[in-house]
Length: 255
Image (tube, rainbow, N blue to C red; front, side, top):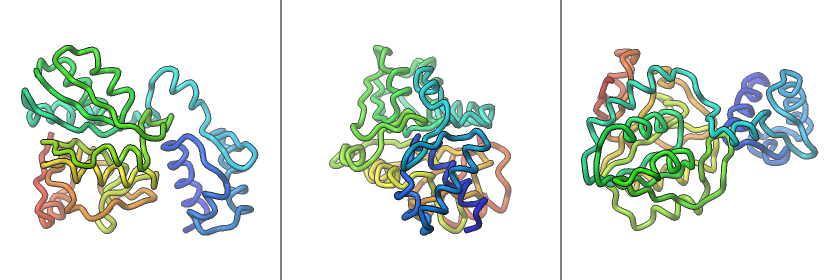
């Protein structure tokens, strides 16, 4: 991995987890701690992070948590369209899992004003829980786990263990990048066990991802595309990418 690529991945990870230790980053990227410190110095010089003894943390993360705003706010127009399409697959009386993320947050906003009744929503996202928790016709259940400030989410093995023994009708799953080689990818390794547990607990998995994420990859791979049943995306998806999903027996739903 080239130095610029490594720094991009480090920044992705910090935007996901909020902070990281030098020793952990060195092990993850298989470089020396000296190299990681140099990477962090460059990112700090670009005013993206703040270095501290033994590690670094994302700049402005405290303000983001206070305002309950997510770091990833790009392509919101596409995410809103995708969220509206998702309502067609949510029915009164359903039990669903809403993954954390900006697209699933848009789904929660649409659900709030949809009039869908007797809905049970299981989520690892604090912002989604607070958004839907006051609705009298929606029961909200949260996982446990480790708090990740930038994504307002709970992660790790404790979050994954929550899904053991559950049988849920539908999962709306987020992703950071859909690699045609590596499958579903995420910036944070701690999320992988949670995503897999969600998939195992759901009868049907809808991947919700705007078209700009297709063909891109993040740091860690969850597994092959065959883990999902449907992808709900926008009209910007390329025909060659539609073909790949169909070859993997995944139905492509265009919002």
